[in-house]
Amino acid sequence: MAKPLLILAPMRGEIRPAVRSWPNGVTVSTPKPAKVWSYEREGRTVLAGWAGIGREATESAIRALAGRPSFVLQVGVAGGLRDGQESGDAFFCERAFEGDRAIEWKTPQGLRDVLGLSVCGCVTVPKVVIEPEGKRALGARYVQADLVEMETYWGASQAQALSLPFAAVRVVCDVVDQRMADLSPALDPVGDPKPLAFASHMARNPRDATRLKGMAVAFKAAQERLRQIVESAARWSPATHSSP
Image (tube, rainbow, N blue to C red; front, side, top):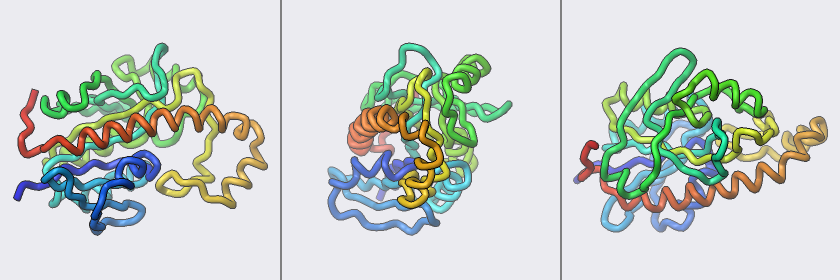
């Protein structure tokens, strides 16, 4: 039997809207905070779930699952680095920068055809970039990158180390001039709010509270686009993929 496709997001909210309607999911053993299920979809097996935010969670989840999938598709939201982008715009990432390092890969033609997305580069950083000035500075430094996020470099490098074919899709959440609230102290490792910590953070940071509505609207647009992408990607069979 052919090994399945693995669709892996950092945050629960990035992939849960897609998989919550899939029937008969069987839990796959993964280290916390990751959670992955095995689904039967249209005659093929698909593994799907979340790894957790950042480098350690990403690498740990891919290592733990290395013997199961034939292909890793990493999906998630990102910040925009360029004018003209909108929340919900989606891209294949085929190059990721992390500090002075860079890594490249190619998206299989079959997956390109299924999703029909443009290609870009991204910058992987250790913490959320909340200010427009920070995003514009990254865009000026990394002229071949259009997005900023926290996991793509680590996902690609770990997959390559394990000889696993890899692709990445990122969807714009916050555009380049949108100021974000730094909610990281109030979120759990998979991006869900911790109620008491969240309330305390809002009380101590009233300016963050004023940014929440815009952030929620942007995330909802990105979340819906991710749902569509995950649904479409699950119909693609890596057993039949061909390189571009």
